Amino acid sequence: MNQVTAVTLVPDRPSATYTSGEVVTGHCIVTVTGELDFDCIEIKLVGKSRVEI
Image (cartoon, rainbow, N blue to C red; front, side):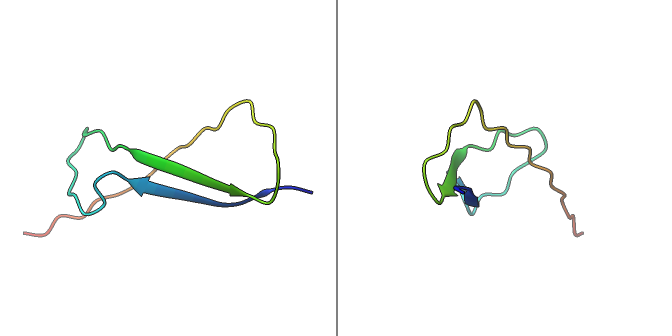
């Protein structure tokens, strides 16, 4: 059975510091073991931040 083996997110600016509400752009690479049919791919990102003073 063919399946997804990896999902890699590659940001256009990998070393950037982003602020709240800023748009992050890049590419999503989906690795599969063979041919698969997709109607859509939905990606949800959840993150957190840390502030030091």
